[in-house]
Length: 133
Image (cartoon, rainbow, N blue to C red):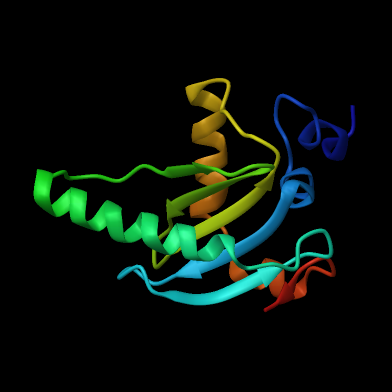
């Protein structure tokens, strides 16, 4: 089996498979303020970003009120999409995915989390499917 076929298998999706499932991306600074948005031809709207902004504000309030130490991710289930928010080294990355999403296992969630934490905004700037909004 070729390395490309190996990375695209359903049990271990490669970066291109993940990018194909993304409808939009929003980058927030560590204070929860939006910095940059990317849209795709399938979804030109950035209205979902307002919901993520509110969720990050709520997360901040809950973490300080309840004295919580860590933040793993936020999943926001919309009508036909799911927004997932994770913290990378220098920002919060919100990704709008096609359809309802439920991670079937902790391993799948961990793998997706690793991809998001290593995520580079330049990937979207250079990818023909994504456009800065």
